[in-house]
Image 1 (cartoon, rainbow, N blue to C red):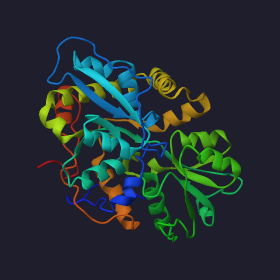
Image 2 (cartoon, rainbow, N blue to C red; image 1 turned 180 degrees about the vertical axis):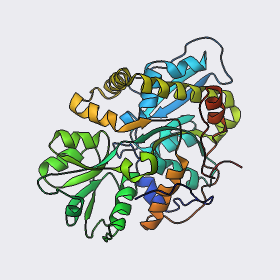
Image 3 (tube, rainbow, N blue to C red; image 1 turned 135 degrees about the vertical axis):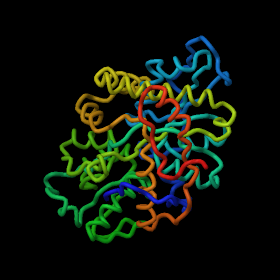
Length: 370
């Protein structure tokens, strides 16, 4: 499933909206369209207030959203906002976060590629913009080593993906196709049985023997490894420079138009958070786990947290070319039709922040606002 290093200006994405409406964010761990505000408090650091009194930020209580977890936990994002209050909300599924963005319940969100594409296309390009990146990687093929020893051994086996049409599902279907094997995308039946299984129950399914492995995001992959599974393939090895988008930063177009200073401040906070994470990986890992414990009531054990954390890269680049390629893979699998993603990105505020910080600017793969 190698991605091209260059992409055409006209991209491919989802108009098969019923499918993607079901799909989770690439880093989602539950299928419920649920918002949870437990364990979070509004934060303001004082100082100059920007054009909005508050900024409502949505994210998932997942490691792949550690930029939000750590940035809010450590006050790095709030510091850039002065007296403008940060109001955080967490979600368990991509569609519910998109709904909240459209309803004005949140202004900015951390989210995976599938729901971002879905939200953009469903609104005919009027609801959101991707304004930055947050994380890459964190997806692995893990298998029962007693049943599967090589990649060729997957033929005839039962492999879980999170949900029909979600980012991992599309990636696995594309990988199967490149092996020359046949699978009906909708039913999951074929040379490999693709079993759509909620990440929350995948460990139990593996333990019971009802699946032989999973193409899964973290920390699900590392939970299976802790149960005796083996990592057979890290998806990052299939992409140029070992990078592909797992988490984006999106904003409602209305909020971007009315409060560009607030958007820029949040992006400064995100860039500063990623820099802190990369400079202090152990402290950042502990901070993210503490935030998870606050939000979910349970921290991840070390044998899950450590390998999961190592497989995720926290970056500012949204890796636009890889989102374009992921959409093409969905078209190839027969899950999506062709459409135009031009305008899904507005990276001008991020590039302004990066330039001020002495960092290289990032590209939109020809899919930016004209």
